[in-house]
Image (cartoon, rainbow, N blue to C red):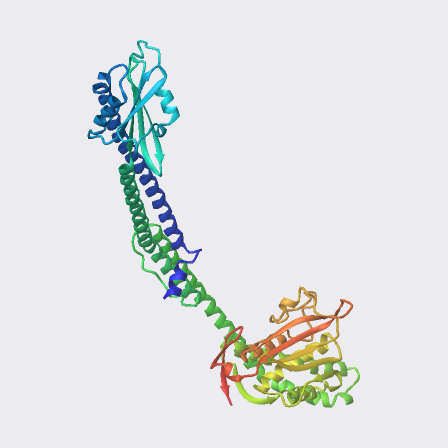
Length: 509
């Protein structure tokens, strides 16, 4: 199950991208909304507390400090400060007066909690500064405030001076309660943001499922179509773009099914024609072969003027007979009726028999150990070897070297010649049917089917054939190499073996 989840949420998946986009949008919106809400609430809380404390302090300064004598004593200042601090605004007060010229005295409501050192210098300078009285500024002294911190706790410090040379007063209010309230608000907004993101992810999953379910069905239908299930169709629901895409898919599938059916019918007709033609040719060819054998036996006694024509007839009849046999073999592969008849084959003996039957012993060098026995179809292996060795002798010349070895559970037979090699542009096509290396020589001694049939016989065994050029020490091409690979274990060959052009059944002996 975890693999399925990981597969659905791989980095390149549309589902993950939709979820990420939804989450990012929700996170951005939630963070922006939370930030604005926090900032507005912070300013509102601090402004309300600040305005309340400063207004109360101003009123107390007018009601109590303004009634003090011009040069009050320290006890008067202390008592007045305590009276001011005992109000509901909950702040400490410090009053600063002068006993004599240049001799300041201080009266504090709580000297242990609030001293003159707690008042910022800039605030004291602003409070002590006398401003000209004008129509726009009727008072020489104003109330100033400043926010500061002490020991990590925020405080509000405010101060003003009584007109006419009276004492200066300072208030010191803790904002710890407001900070705690704002921290609680921040946590609440953070939790709300997290919930919004989680909700957006769930919504994204629902949206992605809604959007991607039709896409998944399209992908599954396309996969079935690729596997050959051409009757695959999708039910069309709705009238959106995905419904249009589904209709397009159904139309394409129907068109493809019709075209494939037409092509299959034509291909079947062509195969049947080739099979029927080849079968019909076998009867007259049998008679022609018998006649050519008689003519060949009597060739030495014929008129010298007629002998070349007789030799041509014999050669072309044999070539036509080989072509018909090859066409019949190709037809069996295409029709899916090619069969394997497995038997334990000694590879060295099989190669020797193939070479000896075609009188190639003097032109072929065999490098094979005795005792390599593999379950194969002897007749089809003989066809493969005959085509590979015959092709090497025809185009590369003797000597042709055939080497046999086993590696990684495979039988490897390499056929190498010492000719000019295979042109690079020809290599990809050497196993194609009726392929001619030179378009200017469409007619040659071969039918163009030998290597193709060899490949089909290798594939029906579960093997393969590769073609390449051998390069010598001087860097020049030193002949062509065909490598046949067949499995050593016949159990790997199932009851149906896939070939390039059809399916062949396996029948064990």
